[in-house]
Length: 557
Figure 1 (tube, rainbow, N blue to C red):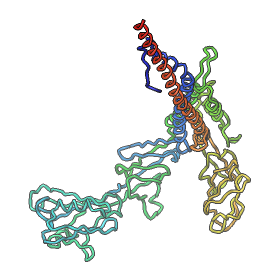
Figure 2: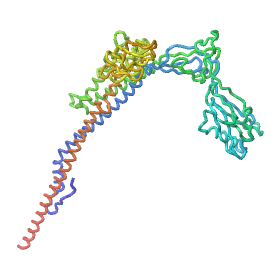
Figure 3: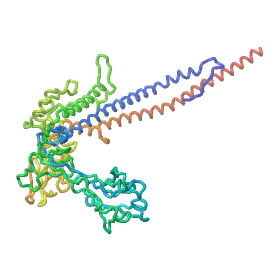
Figure 4: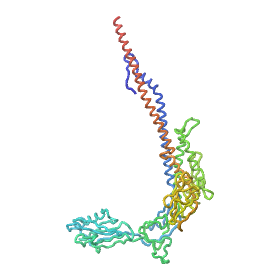
């Protein structure tokens, strides 16, 4: 806007105020445009709130993406001073008896000859660089020790060696106060009988410190043997069977995979009195995940309800009441959680969330009947999980589902896979999923056809054996509500053509258009104000001239 002002010295008129009032009238179209822009900005802000709720719901659904993630297990031990354990979701419920004959230990050796001090007496006073060589777990290492290296210096060189495979050097003071009170100690970081430390002194790997024999292999004592843990699980192996080894061995005290899904953390030995562990479904954790999911869902629906509301009595509306995309969200999401889960049929114990106590309220939110949900978990936890997660069941032990896409629809799909003598899928053979030609990916995977219900479904052929052939069966796919919601959110928020993305772009385009119109109006109003000022300036000038003439005439007459 122009800053030129017109004073009313001649006329006595407040032209500045007049121009200001006139410009307020002229600026009314701009005010209307700015109000529309503010409304669009409000829409963007409120859409950010919806997108935040979508993100929270996506996180909640992703935390229960599979039955293994949802059905977490808890585990307890009868004596946690002997044994503790952890279980992942794949662990099978039940109890096991554990005997521990010995723990896995690391190797420790101590130099027996010793030195008078750590920092003053050199272990290399030869005048030239010398070497210290050792092996750990079968790997030979040589450390260069410059002339003047002390015992503390040697320990530092060993520990800081970038090629150190896992040995810690330290110094022990035996308390004698004598000329050999300080001893170099080497400890392996890893447990297990294969992780031993050996001092070596060969042409290729010399230990030639001082006079060449101060750290000879014969001058070291083993203070702790490197050994494997030994345990027996549920009586196996039975020593009466004549098994080659009467104990199961592990190079670590954290023993995995003996019991699938369980890690045993060995603390102490108990070779005769078994420790009992109990594996059970962690119902509290399962319910907590479901409640987190319900809260995230309800937060989204409540936000959408508030922003799209319209009160007939007060004739007030939410800021997104006229946004067609936002108005569809409630029905869109409520439909996904209230209908029968795709893939379910009469053979399934539960087919909808309502059957396990997750009800849809009149407002579109979810409410959990805790006792009914607990009862369903106790009756068939896997059936409950399939209402939420993606899962699959194959009629063939040689074919499994190893992936799916957002467009994969739950249901039963007949499949046929052709393969050669090596179990490699034949690209030109008969390979179908759900009656549609499947694409071959690599040697062992076929994928559902695009634009078909099985799009994105990946089936893995696993070593069928018996030469070349063709294998047929049925893959039952479950797409639970969490899986469907996750896919729907991915679709809505797709960075290219998601409805939320396009809607945000539409609003921003409208704002950009309004900004252009406002800028054009600002330029026009500047010119209008300049024109007003020129007119009033000309008027004020004319009045001044008339006053001068009047004064002149008064003087004449």
